[in-house]
Length: 107
Length: 117
Image (cartoon, rainbow over all chains, first blue to last red; front, side, top):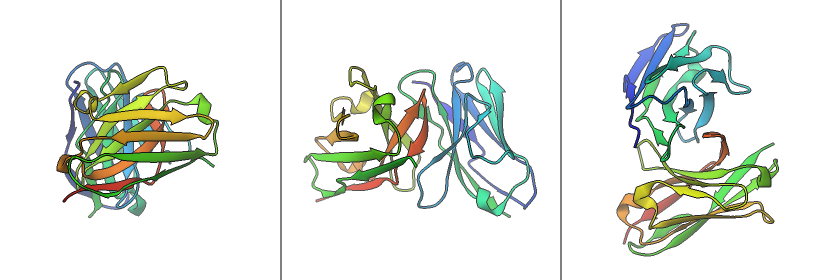
């Protein structure tokens, strides 16, 4: 199975701050990566797919980048509503696998 | 509006079986792969498996392949998850999700399954 390692496990950011979350795959996943946001008590929501494509309706302050085994999610200006847990997911090979999550809070 | 509504969860004794349903609306169900993902309390996401449009292809995570069965009824716009030999490790929120290639673009609200005597 492809292992997905996220970092950091948690972070806090001030309003307006730029936030970056990292995701490393155990092998090359050829941009087969998605990012999800999960707010407390809610189901995950797709933010980014194909490593860098923004899902419809997602604010443009979210962006994804990376290639090979290294990927990142950037929030260009942290907002209150961005608090939650962020997960990466590889879509190259079965079984599909998720990272362990990054908890993002407002400082 | 795309809606996915899971049902069938609850408290079940160890070793027993349970069948979850996911009612889909707001899109042409026949045109999409569908999947199940679970989340143990306070934990991360675990992909269970997914089924293609006509049920001819079903993929599972290896550790659950012998316990869980995914199926669908396109006439009823419904996805199913049959779970057997349940143990405490299966206690989780179970989500159904619409697959868009290998991502999940819409998720249900989730249904809680608690395995306990």
